[in-house]
Length: 260
Ligand code: CO8
Image (tube, rainbow, N blue to C red; front, side):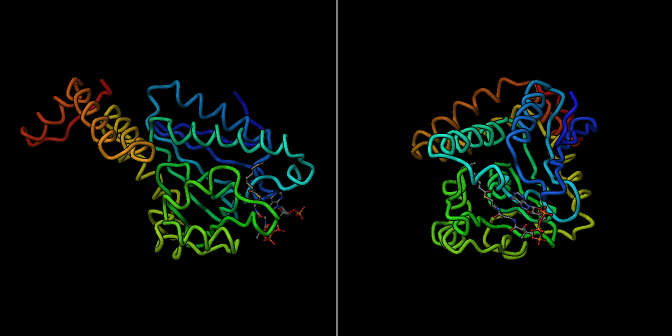
């Protein structure tokens, strides 16, 4: 299916989704959210796709936020529905069961930062800037930012970022744990592809279980989470990939995982 505001490229088990509205720094309007949902559902249904890279078109922005031209006219009920709609999509990304790497190539502000936070891992170009500037528009984050930012960087730092609306450079985002790695801008996509290839070579069922168990840690008590982890561990032991992984170690060779 063709998209107006996305580019979707497949390279073996890795799909790269590029949000492309460069004239507005890849801001997320309703159509872009619909297209992104379709692209993510396509990935979800294709077992041969193991990893997704999500990035923004051009050199200036990952995503500069929700499209502000669509925000100003909202009434309470439509604004609530818009926030809930984006939250459902970001939760779909977060619970895809496959790693999603945000390759943050520039501004990741507001909804763009919230999108990056819903991804599994975040690589940032050294030129990137991240922040939640909604307060400067008389708003609060509406795509999960108030929930995910404190979990990533701690309550104090999250509140400072949200209450000041300040955008921070990539190195500072790395220091506080908002991004996993910072790389030179011209090496960003190569680094993202190398990481994606590494992740794609791992056992996909175990990968999905790690994602599931870590997600559960945000919803369950420690005791419940550990029970959940043990149940998944038991299921992983039923896979051919577990036999292959342990056998390959003992045979001193690289394992070949099949996702079975
Ligand atoms: N929405 C719409 N248009 C945008 C956006 C945006 N978020 N960001 C930039 N643009 C447009 C600009 O209006 C400009 O258009 P034009 O060329 O027609 O004037 C073009 O992109 C280029 O931008 P600038 O000229 O401003 O470029 P600068 O290099 O001077 O500045 C900045 C870059 C600092 C990124 C600046 O563009 C900026 O501050 N953008 C807005 C950032 C922002 O406030 N983002 C948060 C938006 S609110 C949000 O994301 C809420 C999420 C939750 C929503 C839940 C319910 C819907």
